[in-house]
Image (cartoon, one colour):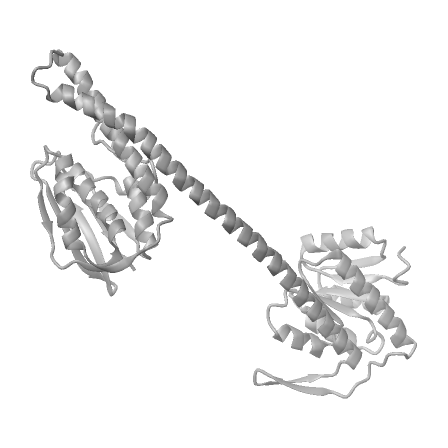
Length: 416
């Protein structure tokens, strides 16, 4: 038995996990104890056997911790029992209500065992001095006005001081915890910055080291295919053409991977843009990638937006490029880039009459490396739309698509 407390400690805690933690604490420090899940049960037991100290949760079914504390303090036979309230202390009203109820201490959850032990020791010592007449609990009521409301505080000065000291201790502890967390976050941020710099350096190296040999492969295979005096057979020409297509596909994959890795970290340089001009500017390059497709492309004029020029070129290149690609097998491909109002915002859209897709698979559209069509049907890397989504979200916008198989697709996006 712990000599610190001559009687027993009564605890009220409706949480099984917290009750088990208190039980472990009491056993560890050899306290005699009783734990109840409701204040009603605790009050009945106190009527039979008065504890040396009470620890109570505040938020409980039925009688809460404040009401429980008040009933204990208003009873002459139990008024000297120190009461510790377990709280989150998220509202200054908690302190006022604690003073009104006559609580002796606040301890926040999760609590430190050493601190709880020191508070028990302090309050038990105070209780002895009260019983010996050294400390008086009698005090004139204090009328306190807070947030336009009147409060009557009847706690003694020593009791008020103890309660406020416990609140101050808690504030200091929280501040130390926040300072520690802040230091850890700063260290994590430094590590992330270094990791990003390393990733950028790695990306540039990989890009250069992979693109160089690919450029050689593309150059020589193109030379073989384009050479009218070449002696390679038609079968061998087919092999060389396949090598060229694979090298071009790998070059595009490298480009898309680099764009994807950088899209989340690039700083926005927003300016007033005419998306119509950008779309018309990049359209020629897109059509060169699909020489067998002759779509009718309509780009509405005056599609203005505030955005990053470089990043919006990536967005439109991907979205218009996809529209051209997936409508390339349509007899009369048509593509429209326009704008309409949507809940007071500008909603841009790119519509085609191509292959389309099942809407049940729409949630996979923007996942990296996921493709809804096989590489045999349509070439691609499965990274472009992931990059587009990152860029749109970086602008504070949203992007989604609507489609039906064989009836084309429409991609919608906002920018703020």
